[in-house]
Structure formats: C-alpha cells, structure tokens
Amino acid sequence: MENKKIGFFSRIKIAVANLENYSLFVEEKLSIAVKYFFLIVLVLTLAICGIQTFDVMQKIQKGYHYVKNEMADFSYENGTLNFSEKVYAYDSEYDFYLMVDTEEQVSDQMLQEYKTQVKSSGLIFLQNKVIYKSGNSEIEYQLADLSNQYGINTLDKAKLVEEVENVGMMGIAITIFIAVLISMYIIELVSTFIDWLMITIFSLIVARVCRIHMRWKHGFNISIYALTLPIILSMLYNIANYLTGFYTQYFRVVYLLISYVYVVAVILMIKSDLLKQEVEVGRIVETQKEIHEELKNPEDKKEKKKPEEKNPPQSDEKPTNEEPDGSEI
Image (cartoon, rainbow, N blue to C red; front, side, top):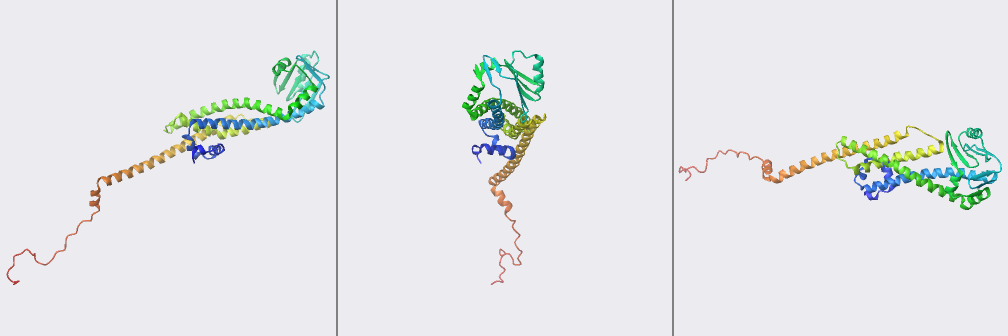
C-alpha cells in the first residue's frame, strides 16, 4: 500500500489501532503530516460546533416563542431600554432566569436581590445595561456599547420579531455555527500544536534513549498520529462537558499520557524492526563471504571434495621387467 493512497479515515484507523503500521508514516513528507493535523483538528471542531449550535438554537427558538407570545412590549432607543412592565421569567428545562426592571432608578439593594434570585444562569435587564450571571461570575454590558457594536439604534418587540422571521432560524443557525467554528478552530489549532510540539520533543528523547537516530521530521510524523486517539477523546469529552457539565481534572493528564504511551510503543517497534534488519543483514553478509571464498578458490574446494586414491592390490605375478632365464623357450 502506497502512502499517497492512504485516505484520511484510513489514517485515523491506522493511527488508533495499528501501531505496527506507523512505519508507513515515518518517512512521509512533513507536509502530509501537517495536512493531517489541520484536517483532524477541523473534524474535531466541526463536531463540537455542530453540537453547540444545535443546543443554542433550541434555546433561541424557545426564547423567540416566549418573546413573540408572552413577553411584554418594549422599546429601545439611543442606549435606553423601556419595558411596559417588570418581567420575571424562569425556564426549568434550561434552569435560566430572565429579569427586567427598566425604571430610572434601581437601588443597589434591589439589584443585589435580583442577582441573588438567579441561582444558576440568567439575564438581568436594566434601563441602560444588561447583566449576564452564571454561577458566581457576572458580566456587565452597557446597552449603548452593544448598539454601537451591532449597529442597532432603535428596536421594539414588533421589529425584533420581524427581523427574526426575515432572517429565519436556518440563517441564525448558520451565522452562529460559522462564528463559533472560526473562533474555536483557531483555539484548537494553537492548543493541539503545542501538544504536538511537546510530544515530538518527548519522542526524540525516547529515540535517543533507545539509541535510534531520529530526525525532527520523523518525530513530528509519529507524534501527530499518536495524538489521534487523544484528539477524538477530547472531542467526546468537550461534547459531554457542554451538554451535561461533566468534568474531570485528570482528563488533561490522561490525554497526554495516551500520546506518550503510543510514542514509546511505536519507537520500541521501530527498534525491534531495526534489530531484525541487522540480523538479516548479518546473515546476508556471511552468505556473501562464503560465496566469495568459493569463487576465489574453486580448486581448493574440488580437492577437498576429491576422494583419496586407494593402494592397488598386491599381485603374485613376477615383475615383467626381469631378465628371461631361457625356460620360456
């Protein structure tokens, strides 16, 4: 199987389950490994962004129906928000709070009470600002800054509903997906590249300990494929963390440990193959020496193989070279 014919998903299969075939990757061009790096991170990011976009769109759809059918009328102009009445809403499915108080003066005591009522996450709208609270963290935005950032000078309930219907839920989903994909892809590329570099350095150290001469290119090629399974596990972990809040402080340790184990296993296999090749080369050299000696001294070989001549049998007859005595006449 030629390296150039190995497909992307076949590479993933080899990288995860066929360590003995890593030799297919070691001598490849570094550009092929870099291409694989960008693709595997892209697949990871696409999966995470897809799940996040789906989850966010469910919340947006539910929020849109609430605004359209239940929320009180409101208007926004020049950084000032006004609602026709105070709003207190809670969604048990997402454990989300919405509180609105657009009176000109909201005391610090009342604002603190609003924050205390938000147990998990929620939005608190005041006349000139909005506060997002999640757990113990709070982020405050001035409405005037948001209007300048997004170019919204005036807005009311009817106009908001109309804008959403014009764009459509699919358009909103695509916008969210692209925005999240770009930002997350850059973050994942930087993070994974740092891991790739660390594991490459580790692979060179292991190769030196095993007395194997390994170039940087070989270390890079091995390391990116050794990261394949951890990258897949990272994708599953991030999805689980986003959907369920599952978290473990040891994931990062396990993530790197798996890569290190893969690298050590592959280098030991390479070492074993090299030893087998040395033994085979030794046998070939010995065989060639024997053939060379045979060709150099063919007569010696024949003499060694020629059997020794036996002594001729003794005869009772007299030697023929004696002088005649006259009796034979």
